[in-house]
Image (tube, rainbow, N blue to C red; front, side, top):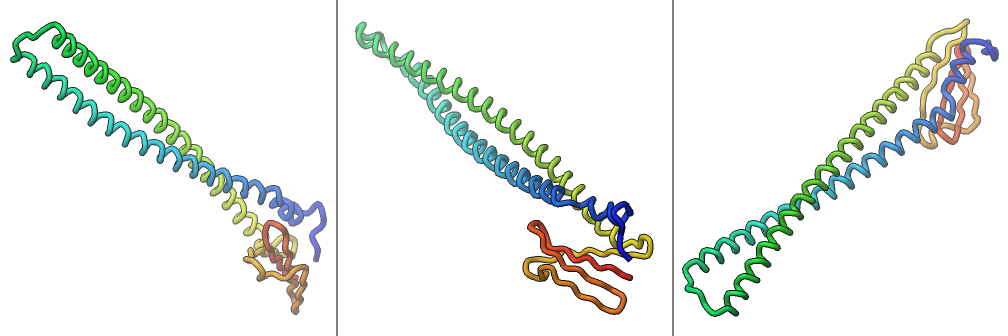
Amino acid sequence: MRATPGSPAAARRAAWSPAMEMAEAELHKERLQAIAEKRKRQTEIEGKRQELDEQILLLQHCKSKVLREKWLLQGIPAGNAEEEEARRRQSEEDEFRVKQLEDNIQRLEQEIQALESEESQISAKEQIILEKLKETEKSFKDFQKSFSNTDGGVGWESVLLKGDEAASDATETSSADMTIKVRSPFSNLILKVHL
């Protein structure tokens, strides 16, 4: 018994189309891109954190140096004007360096926050894509089950095959069953008709 074009069996067959398979492939591609972007952000965050740690250590060193110089200068009697000018310039340079390091640290902290925010958004996008993939897999399983149920005396089963396990356009018949093996560019599908 064959399924007529308007029958529920024909509608189920048309329900899972190559377009759906391409959509699933596109979802897999988007998920892989999201994973790659997330990993890239994590690498950037790691690099910024290392740079931040280095800047913090350098800042601590510079602050210690400035304090040490001030402490040493307190015990030294006033020298000539030239020596005082050199000490003042050195002190200003050290304080300027400390200010630069503090600004760099603040900038790096903001960059890390921005990258972490981007990573969070990418993770959310990846989760949405993963949910869509699960829905697609569920839809495909439901599609397979719909062919397993009997409809008007005709039962359909579908089984996915891997690689070269399916023969192209081969038909096998047995006493009450007919098996049709079909290879498409997207997957291999076996349809069994129970008569």
